Amino acid sequence: MSKHNHSIYKDDERRNLIEGLKLVLKQYSDEPPNLDIAAQTSSFARKASYVISLLIAQRGKPFVDGEFIKSCLLKAVNAFGGSLTVDDVLQIPLSDKPVASRVQVIAGSIEEKFKSLLQSCVYFSLYLDESTDNRHVSQLSIFVRIVQDDISYTEELLDFFPLHGTTTGADIFSPVENTFEKFNINFSKCSCIVTDSAPSMVGTRKGFAGSYFKEI
Image (cartoon, helix red, strand yellow):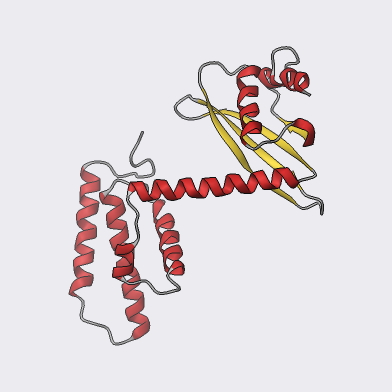
């Protein structure tokens, strides 16, 4: 996997880029304090931009990660009520274990929300997308549209499965059954299932469609 897919700089060019960023940061550090508040704020913002850009370059991250980092900063400031100090930042647990734990809690909460919506809905429909990533690994994405009594609806990615080996209708039907079991639902409220026109999807004997009609 490439560490810097979006970078046009390699090896010596990247090292020169990093050294250039360091020189610019030194110039900002050597500047005398500016008494104009607006100008000083703008200077701080530019310096912060260079600091973050240097970290991105040093870690070999894609340059587009800058916007992601900015969104993280905004979320963190909002979480602290609009004010964030260095001590506050140091207290935020962001090592691998806390992050993994938080992600599991969020995933569990989302799963419970979907279970509740699917139990109370009038009907739901599914869209199945079988695709291949850049590593030539097949994967099945299961999207759901959940319709409530007031005709309002929710559309989300419901589940995701890697498909190892073959991608026959049975290989695709099995993860769908697993998803139904996980969310404690059946086909009674399923109004339709949308797929592409691949034989593994629409075949009535060996395709997903054949397995689906046998089930209902």
